[in-house]
Image (spheres, rainbow, N blue to C red):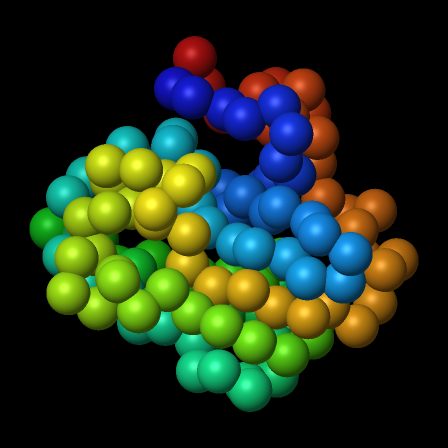
Length: 126
């Protein structure tokens, strides 16, 4: 499993890239591998308010449907429209082309709830 050292992670297997007050969110390589072939992504709407730890969309794979959990509270400023026609981008490129949404987060204290790559490696099976 590929785990990017420069990203943050959640226990529900989302990854987070921070740039000032903008967080780009996707699911980890581990998560996409566990789900299998992704066939549909319900993206959070632009301008939608999201809350840390709450569902904001879903990912449908051949064998399961999983909620997309927002790692941070704030307002969605962009979502990856490429996933509408090509949801398998998450399988092919979970950390680059398969990002899911961007949120302008409103509470910096919530960053403390995210896991480092080292911490995340400890919670996933080898």
